[in-house]
Length: 263
Image (cartoon, rainbow, N blue to C red):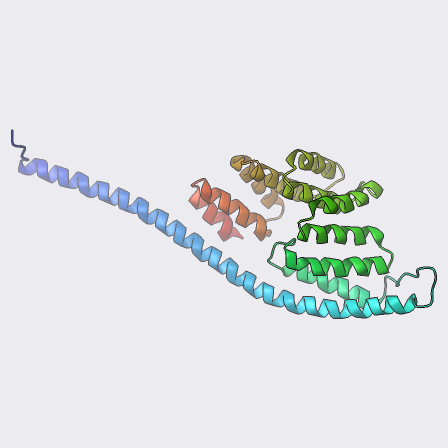
């Protein structure tokens, strides 16, 4: 039997097809728009990060100059001393070096434990040792080991600090970070609990728990933890980028775009 449409039927079918194409087309356009907008935001973040990176290099170079002067003074003080004599903590070169390194770390868009960062932590370890701040020297040493992917020694150094000062949240954080990077997630969760009991900032606790969940493949839990962290520190770009990546992978494009745009 030959199939044919009457004129009214054809008009009705054509109207349905037009509506269907509008719906599908608008859906595709929405997805494309969200992706393009997210790409634009990410490109802007990358542009800002490139500018920040250039500024950090200037700060690092200046910090190294002051650090060299401070260490030279520490060596001079101990030139003829049989017993170690610490450099005064109010030494202007020491104070300026620490200040500049702090500003550089705050601006630096890179992973704080990338290999090229190790040199700065080692300089700071020497500086803190020179003024007799041994716990700070050990924490800088732990950071240096993290950069070298020597997670065992990083944990040992950080653990030496928490053994002497159980309230040192930074040392607990370093210990947990080393365990997460070594994929020792049960140990990391136990350390995060101790860090929380020591009074660590809630944002840091949620961020670390998010990292553990992400390592375990628990995407929705990681998203929930990162959202809680952002409530406390909305200016944290690293958390925003991790969260946006997870949301995008979960097909929650509008939420991913908003997370990036709000930053």
